[in-house]
Image (cartoon, rainbow, N blue to C red):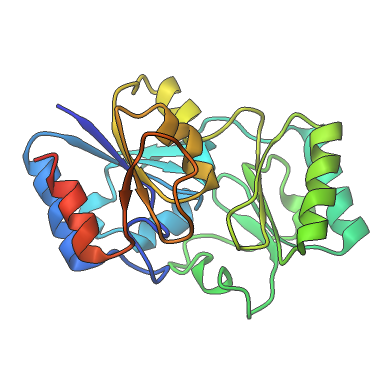
Amino acid sequence: MKNFVFDIDGTVSFDGQSIPDNIVNSIKKIILNDNQVIFASARPIRDLLPVLPEEFSDNLLIGANGAMVSNQSEIRIINSIGKKDAEYIFELITRYQLSYVVDSDWNYASQISESNCMYGQIDVGNFARRVPLSMIESPVKVILLDLTDELIEEISGLLNANTNLSVVSHIGEGNLNITASEVNKYSTLNKLGITEYIAFGNDMNDIEMLQHAESGIWITSKTDPLVDNQTVCAADVNEIIKNIEMFL
């Protein structure tokens, strides 16, 4: 049995809402060959589930860039942001008047413009409650939104100087994704005992996962590969299917 790990947005989903049927069918072939398919996303589990076909909902899911997992629909937190660091992030939100999404294990706090592409991706299944920021005591993940390049650099610098948090800026999105120290997709795979795997990804939050993969496939939906020794695949459904099915 081999392990296949798929990022979602920009890797196998291109509308933020679903995975094309032809790609789903190729992933099913992988499973029918007695392999394990894992989905690993920046989205929390709550927002990952609506994108997946229902038949994949019991698969091993890695959400919030590695901060949470779901297996057979049972969710557990790998690591959350500590109280002191959370208070510092919240102070930065107030100081800079930032837009944000702050996720707990299930519920969330948010201040986000309807024009932001993430607006229509948050809790589309109406599974959770939007609560005041003050009610999020143990954040699992924080996204700071609509940042200029200058703000990304400034706030990243402050976070790196004053915390040990993991801070990732997704390419071309003007966002900062923040999780607990040393939390990422690869570190969570490793904690789960999954050290041999084939990975598909497309962004900064996939780098560690792809670096440690037996085979890594970089989907060029945003940029050319940021990791050496990757198979390069165009962000085209037929090309992605070819790169999935070459392992059959």
